[in-house]
Length: 220
Image 1 (cartoon, rainbow, N blue to C red):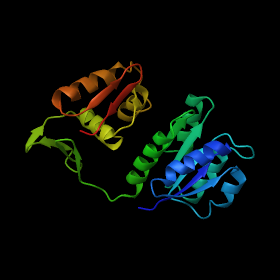
Image 2: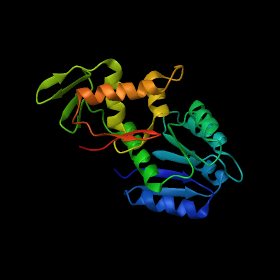
Image 3: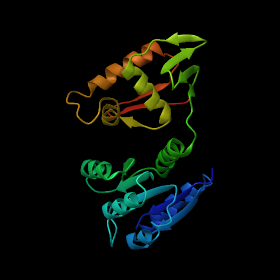
């Protein structure tokens, strides 16, 4: 699908690089170097906003407030070179769907954009395929060769999270927040235990350990 993306990034060289990568996916990209220029286009929304938080005239926080006032359901990715934890939390509170701290690889932005666009705009899929495994979203069941695999609720949630973010490096903190929620207090080693159990039950799932960071599931 030919999605339309608004990219707001004041670094001209980075703006050109990111625009080039995004356009290679066949998407229409409108780029802005100034927040005020992007602000004028809020009335004509794209399919996805990619916002730098630090802009010379108006920050991304103000922009996302106005974007969400116009359409609360439009997806937004925040990018920033500032304090990652603070910007990420504030961004989520204001309605951003994803956050990328600088520096990052342009290809990672493309992958995250693609996943977000598919999640928002593709029809609901009742059945997913991950390697040899069939995942039924409606019944929350998993099978291989017509035999069901008994997964706990959190094992299933982790499988879906991995399947929706195929090829992406996911930190333990990201997994912890997605599976257990913001209010969980405890060691992130529960993530390792959950991954271990999922590996045992689904040995053909290609779960790669990224030492010191987290995990990535690759296409089988």
